[in-house]
Length: 372
Image (spheres, rainbow, N blue to C red):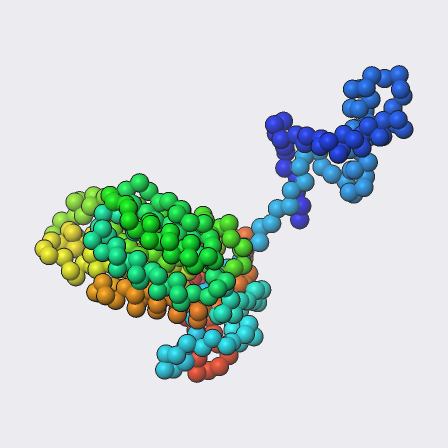
């Protein structure tokens, strides 16, 4: 349903040369020659607008803007058999989607082999300086496993904030070169969630129904979140320290998940061993709680977007895990549906369930979303 929005004086339509030429041609038929040229042109312009209004069936005095309140939910769905083998040859008719127990029609479907747009996020903060070479080698193997039509952008993040090192491209040589150059610099803090929001903005420019994903290599120790966690732990005492932090309530995490939900972006975190709470040299309860919260948030990002958290126990595993993510991306279907109440933004949780027609197959996707 079209609606009219008032236009400010600074947004008034400026006639193009073509319109002015047409107006001049109208002058001789519509305005007496005794009137000045400017007055004749303005009068003819008025006639032209009236004619355009009549032709278009009526226009509001304000802008005619099409406003849509339709909200769609985009899912990334993986399917395996009882042995855990991925199934990649299904069609839309094989799936059934339920929101809060109510079956919803599938409006759009992309097969598992459809190309995707992917942001490769590289943590170039101070904590990764000693093993940048392993990161580079692993990332190159990841590129080798992608399809020719998959579009990749490179975003790195460090003490200077996130930066787009390469816009979306299918040029593998350019992508590889950018990765190598990017990993040669960078130090300082870890603005992980700022970089995730930055990457989501870049993905928003891609085609809306294109499959989208973020692969982020990080220890998960976002600087701002860690400062907030430190303040929470400092106020807790005794046995309360280990459970004082509620990872899912962090405002940055909530913002990232909301944006990922709206775009249907799947997030695959690769968690570096330097952020593993089990590897801390000193068993300080407060520090352990902070590291555990950081790792829990990475797990939350993966589960809530239909991705998977890959924990790196040895740096030698980097190449293998990057290859595993590439394999995961090739087994994901995209399913889009309209919720029962698309205009409802009550902030409540909506539960999602996906079923497959074949009884021996199991589908997995994000468990739901908050209607914000």
